[in-house]
Amino acid sequence: MEFVTAIVAASFIVFALVSRRLERTPITGPMLFVALGIILGPEVLDIARSFDEIDFVDVVLTVTLTIVLFTDASAVNSSNWKQDAALPGRLLGIGLPLTIAAGWVTALLMLGDLEFWEAAVLGTMLAPTDAALGKAVISNPRVPQRIRQALNVESGLNDGVALPVFVVFLEAAAASEDSLSIADFLSELTAEVGIAVAVGVLIGWAGAKLLRWASATQMAQHYWLEIAVVALALMAYALADPLGGSGFIAAWVAGVVFGRFCVDSEVDTHEFAEAVGDGLTMISFLLFGVFVGPVLESLTWEAFLYGVISLVVIRVAAVAVSMIGSGLRPASVLYLGWFGPRGLATVILTIAVIDATELDGAGLITDAALVTVVLSVVAHGATAWWGSNAYADRIEAMPDPHEMLEHESAPVVRVPRRATP
Image 1 (cartoon, rainbow, N blue to C red):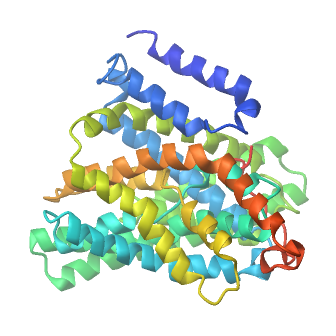
Image 2: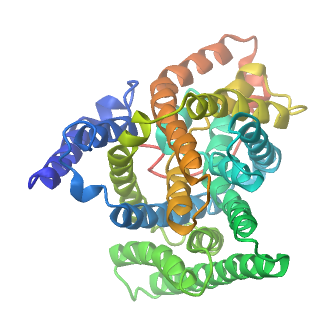
């Protein structure tokens, strides 16, 4: 249909007009745009044929995740979160590995057609969280700052932490099916991760130094510095990928280094990049809706059940174990465990499995991963505002709530606009 682009543009305008009103409802941006994608897709109106080409989708999602990885990592690392790293450290150092391991084992038990390393790939794909799917969870001021900060830092860093693990498992799965030698496997893996880290450090450090110099000497107009931040993220990916490195790892590392050396108090250049990332995120969920329709139509009950267990059991249990001895109340542990939505990173890694490999279990991996994202978009989006207020009510009803560990002083962390309207 010739007017499909106009329809998409109109949907952005309408959403922008009512975005503030929607903040305190069970309806979120990702929910609306996924629904629109399904309606425009082949299973309903079938008028978005120009949007369902895998190459087009791959380009849009790759650019989106590259910018999001860079901006989220730089936002976290430009804040004073290290002053209260106990909870994020538990989530990333204990909860994330347990989530990957539990997802791995569960996939082996439930999805018998998957090979050993293919199950590991699926478990890793479903470990990263996406704060954009439940904005109220970390933007509701009634929720203790320390809890919101822990979820924000985890969301900003866990996708970058999971990426090297995903690369390892994906290479291992491909090597196992192609009968590659251990030496070849290690050579490819070392090059992919090593080149990415080197490029990311170089781009992040050089970019931070140059932007600080241009700002201090008034050589540049401010809005062009904001545009340059987007270019840095894309440059990290575009330089690492043809050299044989992981572009996503390079973008994340560049964001970490950029945030470390270019703090907001000196060069406040994050808003444009985050606005671009926010808009591209909604486009990505629309495209996700377009190509997820056929997946839902042919979905098996095993893949659906695995998605439910991933959201309801695996993540919650892993976070509960990671918080043993932390002193948090059970309500806080449940809040941290439930609100770990799966989103953009999982979709991108799914595309990587489809596009870059010929794994025998690619179809089953895709089905399980994508249905988990659909379930997360609905469940976490619908419960974000209600759940954050219900949790706040419970905390405030406890005796001496301000003397609880949850309310101990915590430095304010800048939350990316993707996560806070």
